[in-house]
Length: 108
Image (tube, rainbow, N blue to C red; front, side):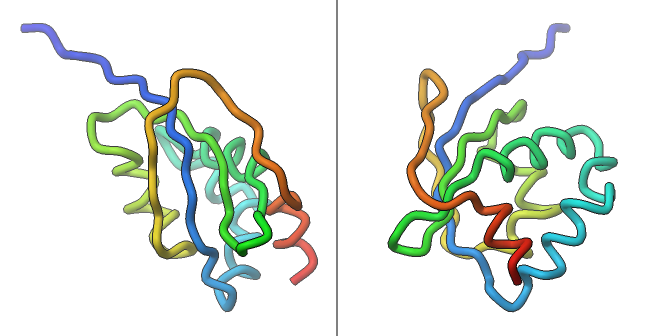
């Protein structure tokens, strides 16, 4: 029996839940999310790439290794700190304009 490996790159857009931003920043910087397996390191890297657009939405790219877009990431982290999460499959990394999300989180 073979298992199919999924590796998909997504462009993600979501609205940060403002009153949870301080908790999110703490978890991003205290090692608790980084220690999460199998995707903690990618979540940290994705949030470092994330930018806040003028419309207030955070946008980032994230690599996922399961057939359901960001299933584990959403269940363990993203759905607690963001609403309106939208994903779109992309072929290559892109860079979004806007203020770095981590700077916004640190300022709260």
